[in-house]
Picture 1 (cartoon, helix red, strand yellow):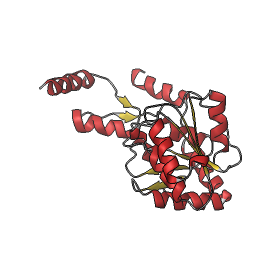
Picture 2 (cartoon, rainbow, N blue to C red; picture 1 turned 135 degrees about the vertical axis):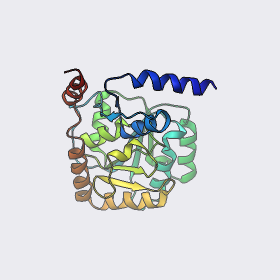
Picture 3 (cartoon, rainbow, N blue to C red; picture 1 turned 180 degrees about the horizontal axis):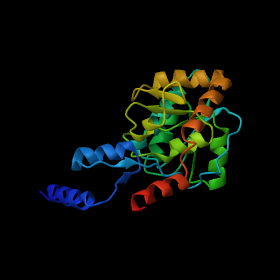
Picture 4 (cartoon, one colour; picture 1 turned 30 degrees about the vertical axis):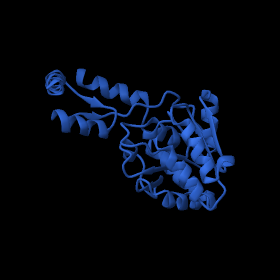
Amino acid sequence: ETEKMLRQFDQRALGEARARFSISRNTADRLQRFNRLEAEPLYPPPALGGRYRSGEHGDYLFSVGRLDPMKRFDLLLRAVAAAKSPVRCIIAGDGPDRDRLLSLARELGIAGRVELPGRITDERLIELYSGALAVFYAPFDEDYGYVTVEAFQSGRPVLTTLDSGGVLEFVSDGVNGFVSPPGAHREMGARIDRLAGDRALAHRLGAAGAATVAAIHWDGVVERLLAPLA
């Protein structure tokens, strides 16, 4: 009953707005599904937008975020273990899943190729993006996902899954990254091998990713937000 009342309140309050915006199509779809209200997706740029750079594609996969089961970093570890190429894996961030991930890395026999550095500086974040072979980002039903935009602004292809929500508003399979079924670590491992064996492919996908997010900047966001008031 309480949930119903809150939903009705949200519907009345939001329904009075002259214009409604959401951070992604995924969140706009939720607003339509639960409150029967339309909203226009308006993607905010990441905090370090403009500072990301593209370097050589290295020998490691990079990811960043809260170490939580919903982020599914275990899929990345299983994909690295399934890959035939000896790629490394760096996952930045802290969270409750850290010990489990370290234990899984040992169980899979890849502990020597997995690094969990915890929280890192902005400079280190930019550096790790710029030198990665690719970026893994496959949370479950993500609202938006800054990591996708950060990776593309760094010219990195993104590895994700079919149920990762807002991530799929940017990543197209075989165009600027690879999209695998959830839990398909062997398929993802094979795609890692493709990138490891063909740096030109990694560069091509990463460049396509950069073009995908080229229009995401604050000038465009502010201009669109102010338009309904003009």
